[in-house]
Image 1 (tube, one colour):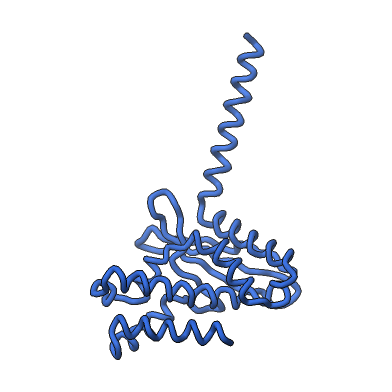
Image 2 (cartoon, one colour):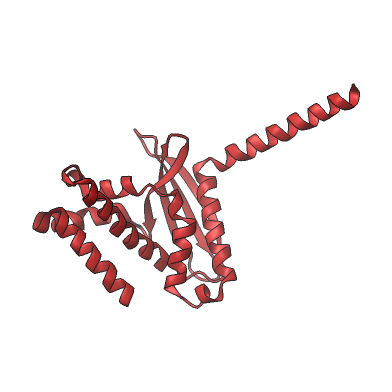
Amino acid sequence: MKNVFKKLLIGAWMALSLAGAALAQATPDALVKRISTEVIDTAKADKAIQGGDINKIIALVDAKVMPSVNFEVMTRSAVGPKWREATPEQRSRLQAEFKTLLVRVYAGALTQIKDQTVEITKTQAVPQSNQVVVQSEVRGSGDAIKLDYRLDKFDADWKIIDVNVGGIWLVTSYRSQFAQELGAGGIDGLIGKLAERNKAAAKS
C-alpha cells in the first residue's frame, strides 16, 4: 500500500508541475519570451539569416511569430470603419496583403540580429480593456532593438494584435495611410496599393 500511495503522490506532483508549466506558458509575457527566443536562436544557427537573407528571415517570422498573431483583428483595426463594407473575398485579400507587408517590416528589424538575447522589460495592462502590452529588448553588443507587443485574449489564447518597432505601432501607423487610400480608391484601391507595395518590396 505504501508503494501505491507513494506512486500516487509522485503522479499528482508531476501533474501539478505540468499544469503549472502550461499555465506559465499561457501568460502573455511568457508567450512573447518563447517566440522571441525561438526566433533569435534560429537566426543565430542559420548562416543565411546571419548574412541578411531577407527571404529566409521572412520564412522564419512566418513560421515562428505569425501563428500567434490575430490578423483579422489587426487588419480590421488598420482598415477602420470601411472594413464593414468589405465583402468576405475583399477581407481575405486585405488580410493576405497586410500580412505580407507586416511580415516584411518585422523581418527587417531582425536583419540586425547576430548574437543578441531577448529580455522582457515590462508587462502592463491597457486601461479599460483586456489587452496587455509586453515590452521587450533585443540586447547585444550594439544598441538594443526595442520590440513591443500588444496582445488580447481570444477564448483561452493570447494573440498579438499590434507590434511596436522602433517606437512606432504598426497598425496605428498604417491606419492613417489606409484612410487616404480608401478615400481615393475604396477597398479595391487599397488592396491594389498593398499588392503593388509588396511586389516592389519583393524585388528590392
